[in-house]
Each structure stands twice: as C-alpha cells, then as structure tokens.
Length: 87
Image 1 (cartoon, one colour):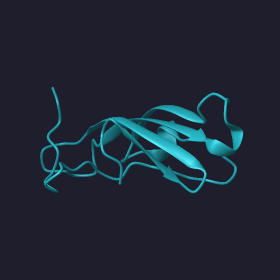
Image 2 (cartoon, rainbow, N blue to C red; image 1 turned 45 degrees about the vertical axis):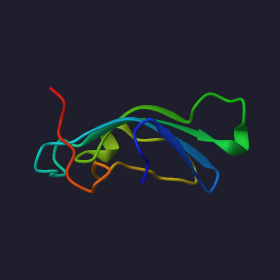
Image 3 (cartoon, rainbow, N blue to C red; image 1 turned 90 degrees about the horizontal axis):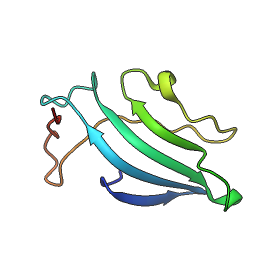
Image 4 (cartoon, rainbow, N blue to C red; image 1 turned 180 degrees about the horizontal axis):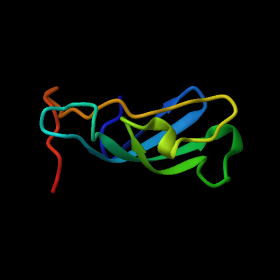
C-alpha cells in the first residue's frame, strides 16, 4: 500500500504514487493511478515507469522490467473507505 503523494521502497523498487482515482463503489473497474517507479539498482537512471496504470487493464500501461511486475488494485481513503473519483 502507498499513500497518494508518498513513496515506498519494496525490495529494490522505489514507488511514488501521485494520484489514485476509483469509482464511488470502489469497484476495480475504472480504478487508475499515476505512479513513478525507479529501480534503485540503477540510481541516476530515468524512472523504469512513469504514467497511469489501470486496474481493469494492467497490460494497457505496464512497467517493463525483467524482474518485477507491479499493478494497481484499488484506492482507499485513510479510514479504509472507498475513495471517490474526482470529476
């Protein structure tokens, strides 16, 4: 889990979540997030991925990495409730 506007490191990936949007009923359909991902093994290199990821269609905009696969599942608020989509 990553909070919007923050970064986490998982193994050697540094993941920044800028925005996460989800339908009001928190259905997977329509959930999308803008993320940036860096491989810390290659510091100083451009991000391994920077863009929108879509829960419904992970292959539509996927990170191309030989070792890791990362995708968006859903968005939640700090209270654990479904996040509301912004217009």
